[in-house]
Image (spheres, rainbow, N blue to C red):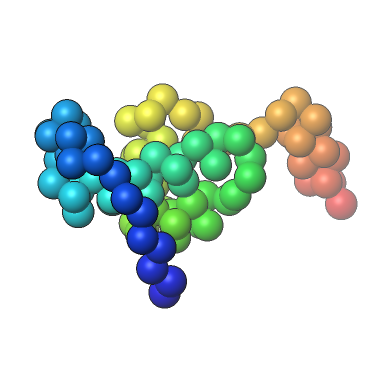
Length: 85
């Protein structure tokens, strides 16, 4: 695993009422949720980035009010066309 150091002001932790470890975990989840919402990564990859199971990631999507199914109308039509093949 790769470690990426970042610098944050001390006030960030107190304003969010999180210790540094909780903050980093929440930041990983938030980034994974956003990248998933944008369609840049899969649920599995997002869960890996967040450091949680896929089921926990799906629960996180609900907490952030992001739909767990990221299909456009075109994606859904294509999937339905492939069902009969």
